Image (tube, rainbow, N blue to C red; front, side, top):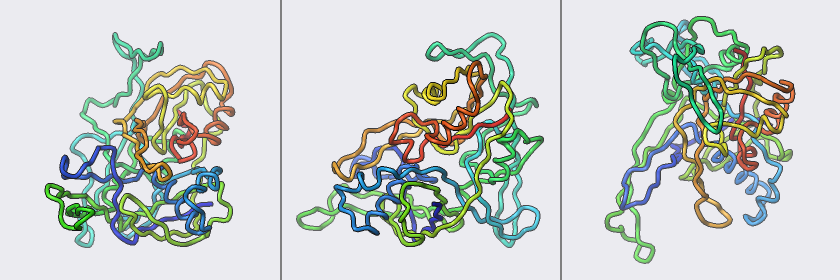
Length: 366
């Protein structure tokens, strides 16, 4: 089942930074939210629909698994100057933009920004290599032209562009946008109250960055809840703000049918690995031997949350961000076994994170 979620109010998704009123007065929000937030929203909505007690919700939803997460963005088209809606995914981090170059246009008194990105290539290191857990790689990702380049923070690509990327059909430049342009930030200022007197608690003034996603909806494909209502309401984010959802359909990203000895893996959602930034278990489970040749990995994310049953925060974990790309050389095994493994469990390395939608990954052609 696939649903499309649209916010009815401002939203707040906590980042991993600790926040305690009185110690730190500023709480930061992030978008897109972590897959675990969306998993919890679906599970809580199902609990309300079926009138399930909180102590039974884990058992009743043990088969719930998120299979795909995408974002439906409405923006102004660069050429037609009309509003268009398209499905988008995080931009792969081996696509870069020439520094200080972007397209900016005023369309109907509204700024429209787009960015021309190009694919980096593998080049040999002249004298050094990267060591990690007895692994070695002697190649880095580099842009051929002698110009400065940079990644696009919060960058997204359409599903058509991502499919072309997976097929290795990115030639020249392609258009990218930012998901942060699809929502607005609004500050909320508040103060804590004492439980006994219900008066303001001294030194507990705080500020939160609320998000108003007017031009973006979240699409989630999941399995395991066959009797989930096709449309309804759910609570979303740290403030339990109201959102509406309805059943929809989205295009599937396709794995290339033919791959050579070299390939890459693109992360569509953040992933949690036991060995830091480097995945191992997916290859072990697929009986593959591979060699890491290079990678483009973003800054790690702190993944926490709150355990509703235990009434306590969950242990903090580090996750590799969405958009990260790993280049491999196949040494032994069958690609189809890896494709099957990624479709079944993703690339994340804990069972719960796999269910929540962490580590949704796709093989791409080099």
